[in-house]
Length: 308
Ligand code: GYE
Image (cartoon, rainbow, N blue to C red; front, side, top):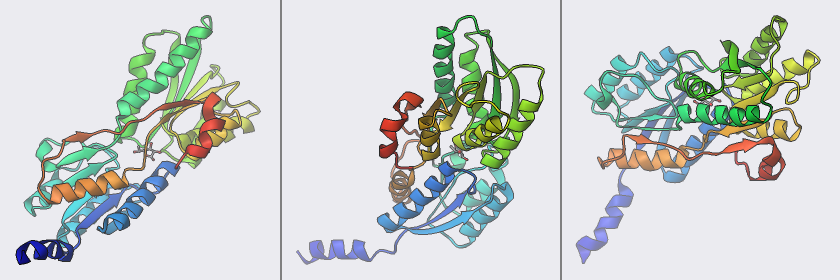
């Protein structure tokens, strides 16, 4: 009996798990919600969180990961700003016996055993969903040629590469849908606006559709379109990804036509996973998040339900 009683007490006394997390930056509404979710969930789960913002620079993420290795944290998680260039630092973590969890974005590494698991959205599917919405709309106006401009996310990042790939794969079904310009707006409002301004200045072809890899760039572009004397959502159909509050507000105002959901609230799942990984339980190598598509018609009704 004494032993049975002592057991829970011992567990409660065990040192809290320490998680070192390297975040991409604070480039978008999505990212802000993601960071807040991770911080709140760590508190809730009793996890000691070391959190570093890399300001969108891979070198800062590598430094943060190295410092977590030096501090001998129990587990490292990070959202890799770009896909490649991680082999060396991940080998260092492995050699130190510290498990690594990828969150949100994927990496390209020669040896997949360098990370334990990857939790995040299916970005290729998000690109497909965006394109399927456009295909359906195009089918309703069969004669129109549809010139698309694309605002890509951060160059070399998983969401930019995958959202482009998924979208292109699906629009091929209708040869009238053509991407006439494509450039990175770095996932930010400011850059989205700047690049859209440049797109609008080139007057050789009419722009019918904007596909933005995230809502923030779409919101920046909306400003550029308005300043050019055009009506966003009407003169130019706008499709974006994330489903942040700002996008729902823009849809309600008739300025954005559709957003594909990408859920940033990964904190609670990440904490549960971190505990399992540290306890050496077997976990899935790839964990995806369920998400929807929200056209402007449902924006007003959905807005009060949005959590980010
Ligand atoms: O869509 C964008 C953010 O990696 C899914 O990064 C994330 C993307 C998100 O800056 O808004």
